[in-house]
Amino acid sequence: MRGQRKAARAAVYTVLGGWLALSVAGQKLFRDADRRSAWDKLYLLIPDWRFFAPHPGIHDYHLLYRDELADGSLAPWKEISSVEERKLTHAFWHPHRRVEKCVFDIAKELSRFVEECHADPERPIESVQVSVPYLTVLAHVAEQEHAGTAARTQFLVSTSAGYDEHEEPRAIFLSAFHPVERPTDSVV
Image 1 (cartoon, rainbow, N blue to C red):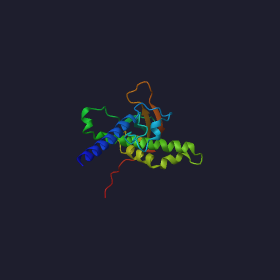
Image 2 (cartoon, rainbow, N blue to C red; image 1 turned 45 degrees about the vertical axis):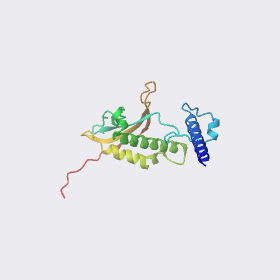
Image 3 (cartoon, one colour; image 1 turned 60 degrees about the horizontal axis):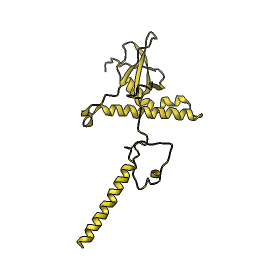
Image 4 (tube, rainbow, N blue to C red; image 1 turned 60 degrees about the vertical axis):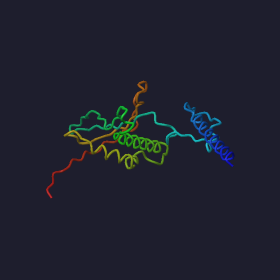
């Protein structure tokens, strides 16, 4: 009886150990997206962990805004949220990461929405201005500090390759100008 239990335990360990080894080997650290392999046919048995992203992000998104002043001139672009350089402490505590992730997600959603508008001739590009991502970014930009004589504001979503300096930053989406609303001093 004891021998059977040992053999069963050894068999389970062997199967699970083999499965783990195949899972590690199946991660294909250097993937060729254009080529399918035998591993791809085993996807039900061999997990493919990519941390919830089939194609991990290789670009950083940047959100910038500028003001049109009352005299018609344009203020320089200001970046709202920049990607903070990583430190060892960020492995444990990185509250700024939520802001970076939010900018990344909204920018990605906005660019997807713009692509859909370009692909569908029945959908006017102006419909972007009433989309949730656009209005979310606009609300965030409206909360920023604006020049004292700012009449209107505009935002820009762009990408950069992060540490890869061979690739130039690229503008993804440039908004229309929107009026800057100032709080009024009213007596209630």
